[in-house]
Length: 448
Image (cartoon, rainbow, N blue to C red):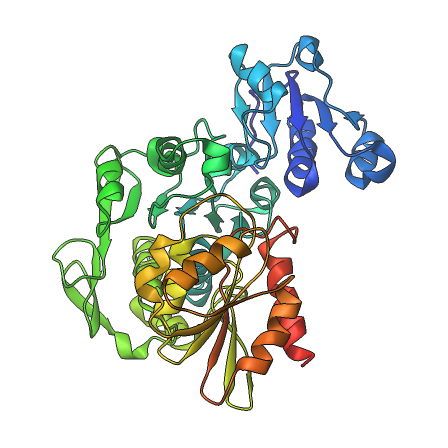
């Protein structure tokens, strides 16, 4: 871990605990800061707060005092899930106090170069691919960020021999000040999390922060097939590495119907790739470009692509029961992700969808419904989904949750069908995370 002295003897407020807040508080204390933690969960129910108190950190639990910032804090490190409309965050910004997420701390203390991967869809698959490829090439990667491991915790253990592969959400990227990955990846930009960001422009600017502080010694890999991403790439000061799946190009990484090309030269056959779906091809070429830029040979990358068949909750094959194939795509929390999943299948499909009501349009699903024979809708959006599907001539059944949806699908499915959980909505109306929603699906399928 690098020695970072700029936080010594500074008063820092950690707002919100969970894994990221806990790790940030511990690191800040190691860096010599005077740390106070504020979390809404009552102290007697808050194990993280209890542990931090034992370490000598000031803990305020059960409420967010309106006058908290009068204590003279010089920095706020907040949990990414806490919106900028939170009164304490609004107060901090009005006072011109910096508001970070723990990703910034990770960058400041990391001895290892960092890869930053973001986008509306495909982050986890791309991050996992990069990690597996680097590991196969003996580059000693570590994985961190939105994928489930706290970046600043990983950074403390990393050495200059490692590479930290970081999946980054827009929530995390809003809280960076100097973060400068060696390789940054922007996969795509679509409407998402507008309830948090307010506007698409604010959301896109948050995503752009992955390359905002890069310079000519760094690389920015971006989706050249999407006009909005190309416009943002023009603002980057890094070396630009475009990717496209629309045909061979002389610069960057590209793919046509048969091959993948690096700087115009063919490097592998698409027939070697195990991971299905056109949407995954974009993730694959972005991952391959990342690893080539980090000094990998092609052979280990080919080996991974021949073996890698997907990530849990992302078009994950669950079971083949009596000729019916079941897939878990619980990570599909927006229409684009569900559309991409639907386009990966040609068999008659029973779609399980629905979830948190964000009042987003389902129109984007329209031209991907060709093979959908029935929809089973659940959650807050089920009535709107039913109306939309009826307009498309697709029969829809309403139910309570994922578990009951599985039982209904089991009654409807016949030999040769695919049953796909791909909700097109966030999970938070019924499940604490898309992972728990996906686990409910897997458990229900296995219990049939």
